[in-house]
Length: 307
Image (cartoon, rainbow, N blue to C red; front, side, top):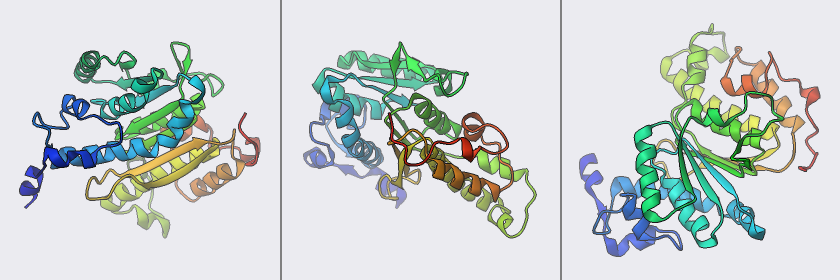
């Protein structure tokens, strides 16, 4: 049954129903999401639904970023084949003649293939660079925001960046003060590894005593911490499904919009959460909130507006 489902296709005559306004079939064929005869197989349909739903959810933020003749820089962290970046470029950068999509990817073959594809399409401001996301983050303190060729980062997106690569994307966005950060995490193993080395204390330890529970609890706790960290740094956070679970199990969207400088209440809540757990030297926490515990009294009040 699964094999038969994977062979199902959406005929070319019905593909238009799957597209966003102003989205072309030509780009999707170049990306090999559509077949040469314009059909859409089941796997590609699932992929397209995720990409288009995320692009659609980002529309209000991108409208603000492209307003008033701005020239925004959108960073796709762990871009892979760049499907999301290409779609955002076609929908926003191409028609406005403004904006750059910077794709960071560590695999040389993917960088070469996507760069060639951008050149073929004439997407001059669709840029691929072979480097890890963390390489763009200055080592010195939060007061040095990441920049690319002296340009600030206006939006950070990461679709299925694996494990701690999602944390790197969040950290980069926070340090940049990016108005919008949107991540759909992939595998999340760091906290599960850290919990495996801790003593199991009743009653909370029952949540991670068995390996399968530890993996699932660790993944959920990772995203809870990510949301709290974003809120502590002044983001309004929405956590939701990206698409229906029938399309992907890697389906949790964390969408963050910068609304203030810091949020002291969110920081206290994060502290309280961490106080009930074993010490977890999670990289994101260690880099952004160093020390045994973040100092809530140093945080700015929750009501302080962004400047």
